[in-house]
Amino acid sequence: MGPFSFMRLLLSRTLETLEDTQALAREILPLLPRGAVVALQGPLGAGKTTFVRFLAEALGFAGRVTSPTYTLIHTYPTPEGPLVHADLYRLKQAEALLPQLWAAEEGARLTLVEWGEPKALEADFLLRLSPEGEARRAELWQVYPRQEEGV
Image 1 (cartoon, rainbow, N blue to C red):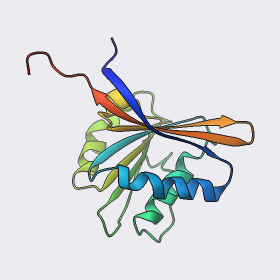
Image 2: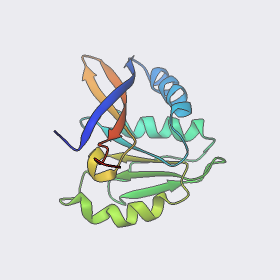
Image 3: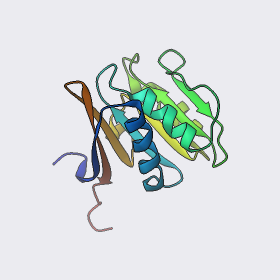
């Protein structure tokens, strides 16, 4: 058995336009409780950063959202609390960034991590973006950690 006893699919959508991605962000936001950690998975160009931009807008952030590929972590202030956006793509050992990421998460409304493994991040959710021809398939999974026996 893996590190998680199971994951539950919360929603699955086909994204054909930027408006579809924006609508997905607005639809998903109420499902993500304060302090949630979301692992974002998908190939280069799948729309991970674009999704984060629309989620930041839905939270009331009016500034520019960019990929943290080189800076590793960006924090965007929103009326609901900070939105933390990290990108682990360039790291050979993503675990090295975890202490910084966990420090940034403190008090955050949401933390979104591109190229992160849910287990290592102790993620609550996984958003998987997969190309389907000209469109993309978006799946939001709730991650359930394995329960310790005897607890």
